[in-house]
Image (cartoon, rainbow, N blue to C red; front, side, top):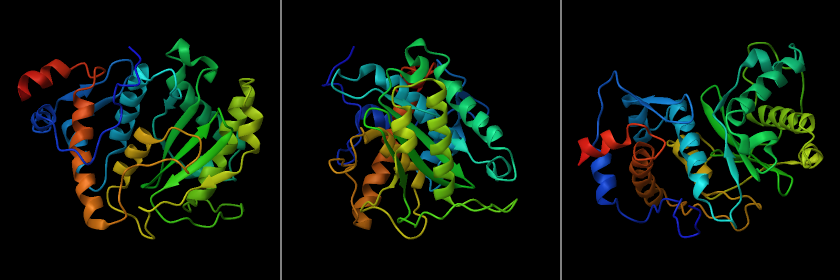
Amino acid sequence: MRSPYYSRVADPDAGLSSEESKVTKYFVTDESRIPLSKSSQQSDRLQIESVGQEYIETNILDAWAVVRNHMEEYRSNDSPFRLFLPTFVVDKDSFSQIRNHDGRFEIGAQHVESVIRATSELNKLKKIDLVFLPVDNEGHRFLLTFDLKYGAVTMFDQKKKDKIIKKSKIRKGAKIANSIVAEMLHADFGRYLYGLDHIKARNIIIAELEIGEYEWQTATLRPYAGLILMRIMETYMGKGMRNWDMRLDSNGVKLQKKLTVLCKKYAATILMSDCNVLKEQVKAISA
């Protein structure tokens, strides 16, 4: 059922519902895993618990992508069709210019194909308006979005905007700057769209990478960076950042309070999602 009245965004100003309060107290054994249908994604107890910690497991970002893709089935006809990819973990050797660019491209292409090949509706991304790609660069997480409808590429980072570093030969073994990783993934995704003969391929290829500035950014790595990425994935609908509101505060005390609420709401959302094949078991134990 598609409806504009179906809420797909958690309200950080609202308290926990009775169901959310019960579910967040749910624990499975250390050995148990929570399989999500329509994918090979599985999360265990400790990974679910990381939603309430400073460093959210990459596994949970991937589980969140599965849940968000499932929730797109409920979007209204006026909402953009969004596609959420699993986290791209940077391999320094593959991204080094010492290696062949084709090798790096193939890794990126396989990353996209791992999601779209399972669903005919996603074939060649023809119906997709907005693609989300979380990136893990040696523990630092940021998010890239490719707006196929408006031909825009945006980098979301919890750190304050850094200058885009001019591309140069990367020393083998050295960490690659986040902005360079973003530019490379931008180029590879544009090339991928070109190979699909996508109508927006040229727009994405020539688009300038936009690095946003937001009230909640800091010069240093902020705790709950992974949670903020989950919030962006939940709330961003494209069309640029001017009219976009994550409903988070720059005030540290208020921000911390809202993030604490979101931690529990997001854990409950994953556990109670229809794509969690153990949903009924969770409901029974937490009742």
